[in-house]
Image (cartoon, rainbow, N blue to C red; front, top):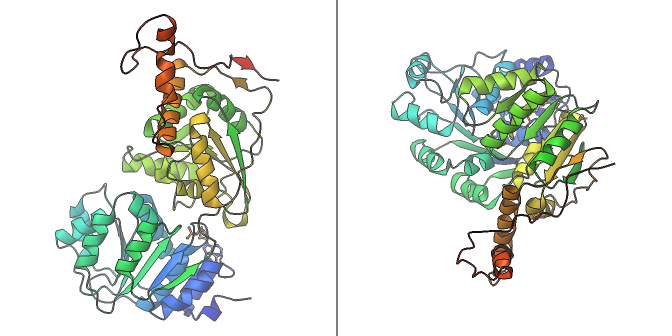
Length: 443
Ligand code: AMP
């Protein structure tokens, strides 16, 4: 079996790896470390949880060897502050027996202190794209010495709209003799395009096929008619004995707040929220409490879906179906890590079914459907919510078939016709109920 020593790492790194408890290289480490050590440009396709951070950090630390000069020689860009901090922690851990200096510069703090800190000298700078540019524009870093530029979670950066910043950064960092590395969980076309602009003759290493959910994650889906029933089902799952650490994913910040508040009230158990509207400290506190098992439930938007390394998550609950389909893979990747098993449960209503089908196409497998367990209250869909679902279904149908007139529109006016009234142009009045399902208790 391949060992870290076989990968030609030096003693300082081997000692740190041993201390970190890594026994053998993970597949991405075995594949990525040799070419990076050789100075090649590289694209690494690997999900978080595969050990991809150490896969690029170890050879980078090895190439930089020891502290030198005042200006950074390696720049690592990450999409979120949390991920940047996590990379910083890993550098501390793996670079423990080297004298390499690393610094994490992220938003949420003033650049003033960061500029002062950077004057002390740094070898590896970890940053988010915008903050790196801010610092660069304030002349906090010179880019002449940069030998390695790494983009981590490139797909996420693209999704978050960082392309203009990345382009600008590529312009200001000298090309000559620079080693470029790009890591991404998936390779959607926009990342491929970026890689073409940014990497010459890259070596491509991939550990799991694109967009697959780890085999250690058991996937389940439930068709749930409405929000209230989703909450009932969520409550039921949270009471299961093996539900020890739960990440609940929602689409919007508003639903995160709504669900978290509801759970806090109902379960007399604290759950915390993680979303982009929270300030940096609140986000980190929520993450720390969850990581350290002080709270069992974290409700999060997709900000938290990628890159975060939280151990022992037993269940991922997709309270809403993600619209960015790759997020399904990333969300579920928060459980079943490092060989542990996990469960990923997805709730969807009729209007979300289309997304389920598309996700199944993306991951090239069927997500097993289960019946809502007995004893769970199936609530009646409130009028407004059903209207919204029907509107969404209509839009989906129209997209699929441009000649489709819109059943929602027709239905909305149907009752007016029955009553002998002239339908309004845009159907301002609608029938009272579309939903035929009565509120009932199953089982
Ligand atoms: P990552 O994919 O970089 O987010 O890493 C996921 C987790 O795996 C982190 O907690 C790492 O510390 C850990 N890890 C990385 N490499 C190894 C290894 N070779 N053996 C065991 N754990 C590892």
